[in-house]
Image: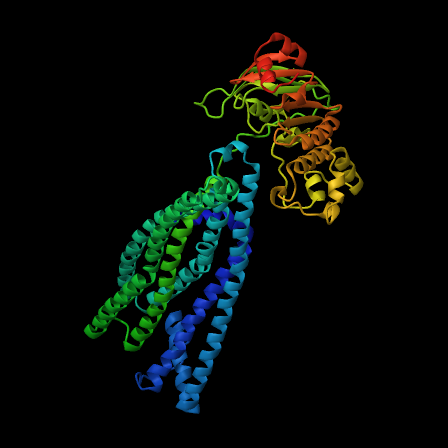
Length: 612
């Protein structure tokens, strides 16, 4: 249970007041439960002639608190029988029992009332923490993690924590209080008998704990398998066009059914083991009561115990009242073990290290910014034991210039561009803007200087207006429309059913490729960054769309420092410098005409695309 308490230490502090109120009302409920049982004893002993003793009033100086309380309660009951008669006294005690029960149920509800905001709040906080961590983790983290599994951790695992750990919080704080209060009363009645009980209870606890540990391991396997299923579904939805095109429906069905069958088997095993908690705890509880009944009865019959038959009955009533809380506590422990497996998976995200950190003493952004970028002796690899993706890279982009990176796929062009906004950190060397190493700037300040237009135009399931203003605060309608006009997007936006308030669909599915790209260009225009990164922004478009997008890009690139990655070499003929990248190295550099004249790799690329 150490892991459970660690979770509480991490997430409970904002809700301490709810926890304190819950514990207070649980203590009151336990005390009122004992008093409710105490009301029953005179009915059993005196009204039905089980106890024919005569009681006299005792002061606090005449005995212990327990002795005085018991004696005087019996004294007043005895006097009531003499004054009102047995039936009236019975009715009065029954009414008192109802009042005590009403108070007990009332404070029990208040205990639950105050634990609910804590339960719901912790689950909300975990979701927020996971989402916030996902947003700030570097892109490299998600190259080794499956998106579907990350989604499963945020949905299925958080739901499991809510259904297991959080739903057990009430039992974890209520039942121990009830058990402790009842045990205290049992010790007051007979410490010898209670000592015997305390020897028996740990034996039952050990038996339950062994099963609980195995349950956590199986639950972890189940949640991991659920993550694989979610990944399978996410890949299927994303690749549905290819699946149908290659008649691969049966193949993906078989893969999903196989994984689903494994999850089915694990789920059955977990559920069966969890259901074992109730019958096993009931059996062990009954066995314990039987042993206590035998041992306590033997003490009374042998005359070596200070308790009488009436006290022993009350003792058994109190002891039996522990059984249900103990059973609920065992079920809670089972549920918590199941939830701890999910928490372990979530912690893999929460505890993931983010290597892209702000410097301890950040430097202010150069002002006014010129946009002078220098890559000097840059080396980079994705894994410490992997090959160099960028090998001793050196080039310069002067303010307002456009530099293009070209070459075969996999040569390292996009990686070089990703190093500039620190999507990844370089291994050695430096990248500077206006003479300041980018690692000396806050990540937020660095990325604020840049605008990105990628090959895949990433849009959100929102309106045109909100997609264009994404990341830009307080933009006016006029500014948005002006950005759309520059990007050649205004005409098709106003032609849609709701204009700028029209939803674009999931990832912009209601738009053509060229329209999506022009919206992303409008977004970059509205941001108005001094530095621009264009990553194959026209490579996936038809000729007509490419022409419209290229016009928009040329307007966007005016008076900006621009780094362009291009497969279509016709789009970068006018670049100030073209760097040819091959296997992580810059093998050629110069203008279009200079590189054509060298008759090297660039010339071969141009000839393959039939560019004159």
